[in-house]
Figure 1 (cartoon, rainbow, N blue to C red):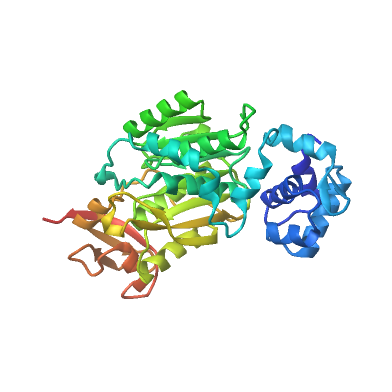
Figure 2 (cartoon, one colour; figure 1 turned 180 degrees about the vertical axis):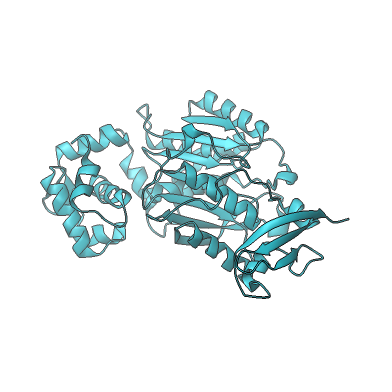
Length: 390
């Protein structure tokens, strides 16, 4: 059973990818005796397809049909060994992932109190980098969301920028879920340009023995080779411009394994319809689907320009996922940069040039993409040059 998931995938190649198979196995592990119908609902798969997956796991010796579907002893041992679930507090796990539960904070109140102490000593936000620190509760809520999406335990996770210390919240949550064991199956890595936050995260990781590594990196440059295609999920809260979002998502995508069904947790400000349409076009261009959207999910300290709130997108990879930006990034991406620069874009279809900026034909590239080229209505543009506005 060394390559159980790969073996089952060879027998039934789901478009949803191996991640869907993992969800089926995990639900049977964590909820022994689950019905096939309930399993289909939990995993978001049609009942006939779920039954077919179940049969393949039974043939592989990992599941059994006995008063519902459950793991065999061999299946449980494989999950414990390969994904590090041995010693998990199953009662707490089910309390945290309960659908529609608003009581999750009660289950981890002591943990939240501990986080609040550590968060109070965070470095000051650098507004030039569009930093706005989220509350400890929001950071922990993000970690719980990844747990519900089965994108935390036993995974290799990348935080593409982390002034919100989501890596720390995830590490603390793991310690609470595995109170009597030394859980080492989950790896969390942070890549950020701000050495102050990296140093602070490293201090907390060392003090509390959290599975976190940090790397100083300017995301304007492609990620180093040893980070490409290595991760199962990513968190990012990028600058609230289309350029910033596209760049951070692209870098995250380059770091993800080339598999369908992997999760991306994108926090982003609420925007007008035109901007939102441009965002969704960017998702489509990168081969990503929107699995869920939670308005007002994130709460920040001192982010009055966005009313101290932002939304959470849960995106999923497909077999067509690919980063939109691959080389070095030369455009402005932070809000202050974008607002004070006049940029000349050229339509890739008809070569018409359009000025973008506060004194241009369009205020933002998002607005231009929403309207389309004034000559041919094309939606793809290339940056030609930039002019600083006085």
